[in-house]
Length: 179
Figure 1 (cartoon, rainbow, N blue to C red):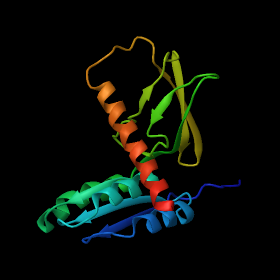
Figure 2: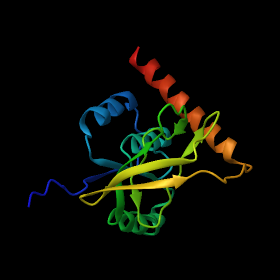
Figure 3: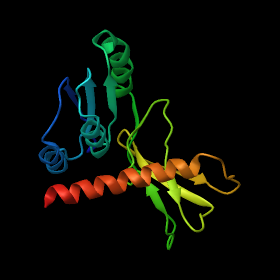
């Protein structure tokens, strides 16, 4: 039996200081991270939250902020437990043909035990079903998500708008730093 599955490699970037060379680090993450995951942890009052959040998003991980050193154990235990229990990896949304749907985040993070998939989307008309695909360990995985019967709720438009604005700001900063 041939087994092409490799364990999920998760990298933790921990700092208690300001990170100032953001564009160089983003470039390194984009170039060298590959299929590994990046989780960032900032301790104290000085970490660059903009960098830490965006680096984690690019690396399909999360950012953990620890304001006071006496909170390290309280914040790290849940994170380390989470990292030991990846449920679904390489998640992607498969849209029906000719669907024009804007989604955020554009690259879905991995799903860990007990966590939901949270995706904000906007379209003139939503299809009745979407498909999520990924990997459960070494096995391909997929499921259909029913969208019919949903209701408009307060806050959904705000969530989508915040994610859209964050995406546009990141694109603008990336272009500005390349020039």
